[in-house]
Image (cartoon, rainbow, N blue to C red; front, top):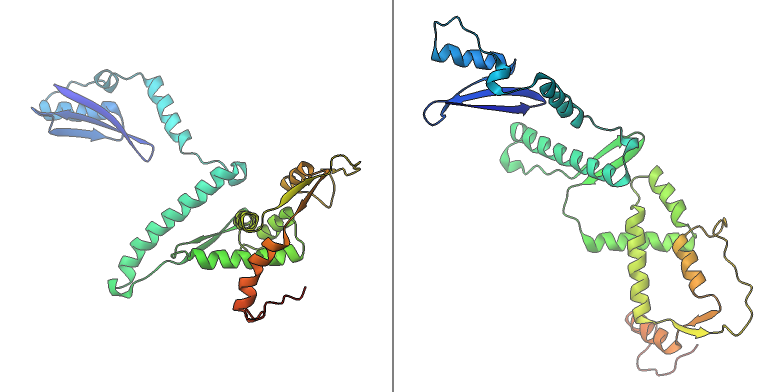
Length: 266
């Protein structure tokens, strides 16, 4: 009794025939199924002039085998980077970075002493004129958050729109990515809304001529437009008491206010 097997190594089919009492022996061929079959035959009958058909031994249909080969080859063809979706681009960049990390570790073993403590910090590469940077050090989340907040201050003072900042990050890879800035900004807004709630005053009884044009050059953030439309004919306000309770501790810590002087000059 024999057992036939076909496996693939780098898209190349490997034909194996296992034999023996417990199938502990095998012959293999990367040339063809027929070559594997006749190699096995020479082991079993060294002096025979007979020939075996690999198609029959492996139970193959040559047309189906050829289709399988083509399928394996096509499955390994990679699409150009600009044809990928954003999520697939991210996955490919991550996969590429991970492969480079493995190569780095393998090369480091042969080039440096283990006590040298070689550490990969950053990889920077360009794909179709777009620069990517992969950081491998331990990320300091607090420091990263402070850095993002500093950028938000500059963006708000500009002001710089979200779309404009996206274009800046495309030109300058050292800038924090737009999504990180947006998440930090959203987090700050949520914290501020909890600390100093916005109260809504309904003034719908009054006539309003406010309209928002989504094609406007001055407002191009869909979330901003949605938020503005939600509060048309409504007024938002914060209580001065909440504002003071929020800012006073900081002013006292900075020695701007004297806690022993109960007079507040507005």
